[in-house]
Length: 499
Image: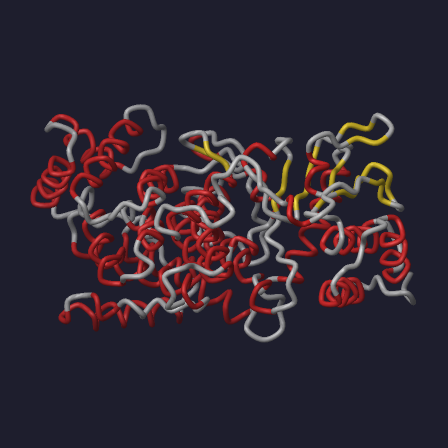
């Protein structure tokens, strides 16, 4: 992306940075300090662990990244000393009561508070600890560096400078600063291009240290995540994260559904053991930047939450604003209270799904009072952008699906369609009445509704498509969506013959 205006694709990837970070963090939280797991061991957001996390709750990794994202979302320059003061103050305030703070970070922040609570005080405390102990290369600055890339998407030099400066607030060692520069520039590159390249920032390192990092990255590519036994050290944390990403990328290079590497990579990071939440959080920022928020499963987006009282939609908002220099887009998204679709024509179309009367099919304005025959909606799957005030249920999935046949706009199309259908099924398995909607119930809604019927109600795909379209008078799904629905259903063995 060379334009100063982010594209929908780059905004998806920018949102993926924070969602990937938080998802990896929450996924690894319940396994922290545990041994490596077998390659086929299931991994999920179980919560628990040493600090009793709730399922989906993020830890210190995301909690420390949030203040950086918050100032970036205002369009702030992350090189400014006043911004550093604000971030340091937020970290100090958080650390007073946080259960999980790295030993080095806690010591530095406590001393910084004693010295006045400024960024300068934090740097002095970090330098003093380094000079006193010679050990300040923990992974605590790398784990939070992801949002730095979003603040400086248009300036690699500024991103590198900011990454190193924010690292030095708590971690004085050159290894920590170098790792943050490399990872920040890799995330920036992935948001702009969709490419995974941990070497793209090598030229931003001092010349005498570049060769060492080349060797470290090559070693990571030759080993498994579990081989990095000291992943509390920033170097092995980065190597473990890059090993996870590299292995997952290779595994999905040829035949897998686009976007599938995100989940695989994060699961590999967790199976590596030991500092699982941090390694997975580090990997998640880069995987999300490459694959996008649309590759993060809805089941994770529903669960993920944490300090300071944020959830997945809040992370999307922060990331989108940071990527846009602190400004919403022309429609006011993501900060508008209600998206204005009045120019689109009719935006009401409520009817029951022909194969499940506890699934209501509708348009965006049906969010206001969706019910049929007294059946109140208690879960929502939105297939279009909505405003803050239009989130009407705690159980609300917002799907990144663009009603446009250009392949680049829906890079993870099959994954997203399947995930949306699965989200409806998961809500129904909990006994909930679900509203499935887009703007006008013309294209996206009937497509996902038909896929839900094919995958989860045993309805032959052609019959599902025909009967859903018949139930929605304005339905006219775009051919690219119909083709994808057929492709997914047939790949799942749900074609006419198998039915």
